[in-house]
Length: 250
Image (spheres, rainbow, N blue to C red):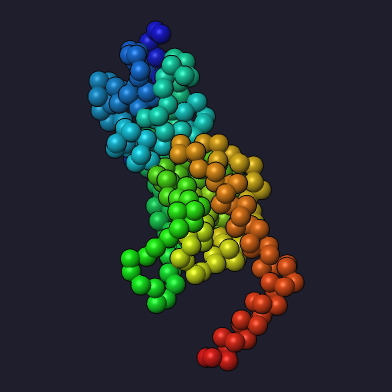
C-alpha cells in the first residue's frame, strides 16, 4: 500500500468557531491501525493535535472516533481494511473540546441516576451463584465504555429526548439480570430513561467493539418488562396491591 491520505478534523475553540478537515500524508507500515497514523501526525508533523487514547488494545475505550463516518475505535481499525483514503472525526454526539477530543461527561451523570446493585437482604457471604445464572449478565460486563453505541444512536444525535442511550440500558440490564439483585429497573428506564424512544434499529449493536448484543439481550428485554408492568392486567394488579401494602406499612 502507498502512503495514507489522512484527513483529520481540526478544531481549536480558542482560535475558531467552526472546525475543518486537514489532510496529511502518512507513510504506511504493515499492520498499521488508524491510531498509529493519527499518532504519527501528532509526533512527526503537528504536536498540537489533540487526541485521547490509552491502552492501544481495544480495552480502555479512549480512542473512539468516527472513521470514514463510522463510529469506531482507532486502535482496532486496521488501515489495510479500509484503504489509504481515511477521514477521522470526533464523535458527533458529544460537544467537541478540541480536534478529536469530545466531552463525554454527561455519561457519568446518567450513570449516577441508575439505581445501584441491590442484593437480597440477609444473604450470607461468600455469595454463591449458579454458573447458568452468571452467564446471563456476564455479557454486559464486557462493556469498555467507549460510547460508540451512544454516538451512533440516531435518537441521541438527532432528537432532543430524555433517552439515556444504549450504554446505560446495558448498565441497568446487567444488574436487573443479576440473580442476586432485587430491584426491577425497567419502570425507571421507561419513566426516566426514555427507553420507549429506542426503535431497535440495532445500529448500536453493530458498532460495539465487544460484540455485546445490546438491542437483543438488553434493550428489548427491558422494553418488554416495562410494557408488562404498564399494560399486563395481572402485573398491574400485583403492582397496585404492593403499593397499597407499602402505604399501610408507612
